[in-house]
Image 1 (tube, protein in one colour):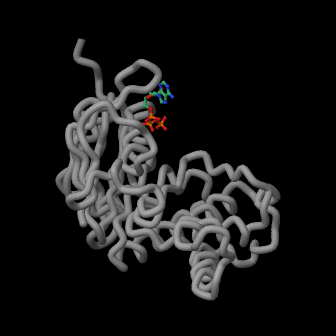
Image 2 (image 1 turned 90 degrees about the vertical axis):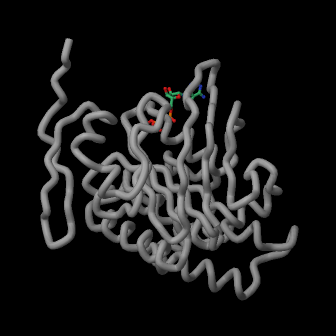
Length: 261
Ligand SMILES: Nc1ncnc2c1ncn2[C@@H]1O[C@H](COP(=O)(O)OP(=O)(O)OP(=O)(O)O)[C@@H](O)[C@H]1O
C-alpha cells in the first residue's frame, strides 16, 4: 500500500509551514526527504505519522485516511523515529526496546515469546545486543540512536519514518544503518528518511523528495529528482555528479549558487 500525501497544509505556532505538499511513497523502497533547515521535513514526516494536526489536504495509506486509523493500529503500521534521540525513561535498554511491542500486546500483558524474539532480533540487527542491560541514559548518543531504532524495529511496522537517523552515528555505524534500512526495504517495508547528507541520500535512496520553504521542489526517482538543477533549486548550491564506483553516482558540492540580483 502506498503512503501518499495530497495538498498538505500545516500551520505551526500561527505560521504556515507546509504549503500544498504532495508526494507518493512506495512500499519496498527508500525515500529520502531532503531540504534546507526549516524547510518542513520534520513537519512532513510527523504529519505522515499522524502526529500533527493538519489544516488541509490528506495523508493516506492505500485508501485509508491516516488520521482516521485507530491509534493502536496506526502504531503497528507506522513506526516513527524522532530526530532528537532522547529517551525519557531511565529504563534498561532491553526494556526500552520492549516498549516497541506495546501495540501488539493485550493491555497489561507482559511480553510473550514472540515479543521476546522480535526484541532480540531488533537488538541484534542494530548492533545493540551488548547494551541490553545498560541504563538507556548511560549509553552514548550514537548507541542510544541505535537502541531507539531497535525499539521501532521491534514493532515490525509496515512503514518506518526516520528523522535524521544518521545524525549521531560515526561513519561505520552510518553505513551499518544504511545497510539495515536497505534490508528492511527489501522485506517490503516502506522506508522514509529525513537526511542532511546529500551523498548518503544519493547512495541509499530509491526516491527523493526535496522541500524548500514548505513546498516540494523535486520528487521522484533518485536519478531524476537529485540532480545539479534540483540541488540548485532546493538548496541554492552548485554541484557536480561524480561516479565513485560502477553505478554509484554522488553529488559533490562546489559552492553556493551566485545570486542574480
Ligand atoms: N511548534 C512550532 N511552532 C512554530 N513554528 C514551528 C514549530 N515547529 C517548527 N516550526 C517551524 O516550522 C518550520 C519547519 O520546521 P521543521 O522542523 O519541519 O523543518 P526541518 O526541515 O525539519 O528543519 P531542520 O533541517 O532544521 O531539522 C521552521 O521554520 C520551524 O521554525
